[in-house]
Image 1 (cartoon, rainbow, N blue to C red):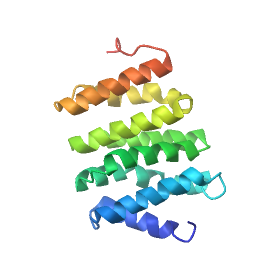
Image 2: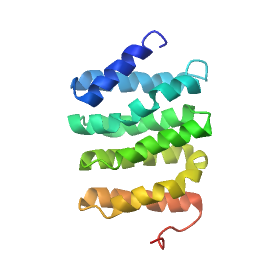
Image 3: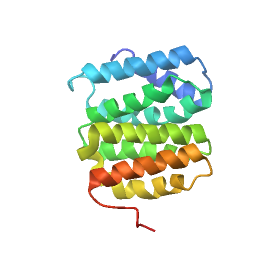
Image 4: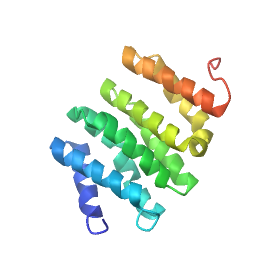
Length: 175
């Protein structure tokens, strides 16, 4: 993986910029990344390497949504959860979480949904580690809960309920 990391990063950047639209390649890269993260025991994927790819991975939400990659709807959130699980440093985990939150600000409803699905996946796998980010997440989620897109609004409300349950407090009364 060490020999291919730069190439993977460059290719993922090309998907973000719209210079590459090969669905099969995108799926293969995300699967390879997820598999690599899943089996690694901190030997290759240390926080310094994870930090280099965190923002690029989060921006795959918009790339995947823009390309309408159907397999990405389940693959990317799963990869995001595995990626977050591999992170050791709380500061890096918070940054990665914030990068995903920023993807909810997209004007594209498909990207908003995929960002919410990614957040849900990250929270389900890493609950106790991300619980401290509930307050930071709230304004993003509340904005989405008021979306004119019914699917986005529904998914935001589902995420908010899950967040409330995990955090032990009720944000339903929050203005």
